[in-house]
Length: 402
Image 1 (spheres, rainbow, N blue to C red):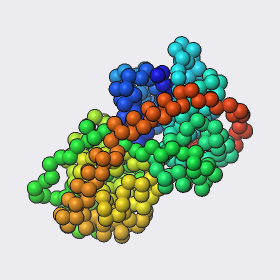
Image 2: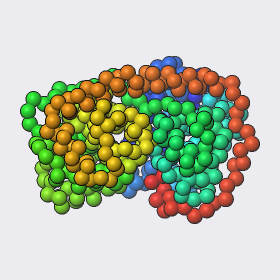
Image 3: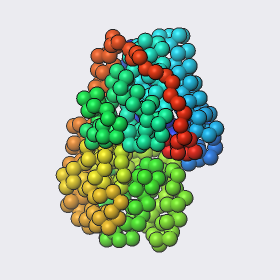
Image 4: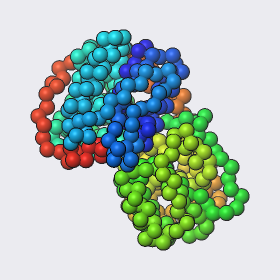
């Protein structure tokens, strides 16, 4: 089968979308499908410094086409970039016809892919991920209408969990039955447990985008109140990286917190193996790749009762959960994990066992490939009005937040 996968973000950008994409691509290649990936990227040096950017790297067995988001970088002109994505898909199809189109993110990539699918007479699959479902469409009428059309007309809508599907249903009115639950997944061959430290501080680990929406500033505020012997590593870059460093200094955390900056994805499994407890104080997720990586690495996980988290972490069973933004509760929970060796080991072992059973990419990749096969002969989207009036939107000033 010839598959065109359209990605909102890919490496070197640091994003759960990048991780999802690379693992799905590897599964498709292993199943001997012919895959082309079209991916947007930031070429602007300032955005690349904060979020990661530059043309996407080669992927073995995949034709990779990078499209610089020139419209976004020139003032939030998403529509110009959408036209470019559509034209690229159409040109690639003319050279060698696709069987199915699969977009990551509903807007702008899902909208572009839906328009291309209608033009070419191909089935269209859209994965709803992250901020795509949390706030895209709440920002302006343009994006709301585009999201509503994607959600109404795509042949299949893949989403990570029931809590996330419920949020999109409540916000945009999409019937729950329109969604196919495809949980997040992790490469359990790459992410494996390390050796627990015999003595010394309990090693806390935050990995991901350094962004207040991920709760990293809350975590820093909690750390001075955490009992016991511990050290915390913060891995990643993001819009609040400098602010987080300044806050750590202001709180007097000194050498108890280390910022390690950008981490190449190939090096990330080793980082997990060098730590014991994963901290993800996030406000919302589509389905957290980093939590699954931590589970596969036999970490005890502390996270929040947030959309996308409650689908995989159950308080007291395979991790600990607190309310998002509750600094005192985070400090208390982290103190328990640092000072109670038995609790920490029990939660870590339960997380590892569940991850290997449920969240392997081998199983999830097979589920997605089955969806492609089922839709191969489906009627393509039709009746989609491509015209939407342009209205003011906060994301045109800060398009990188979309």
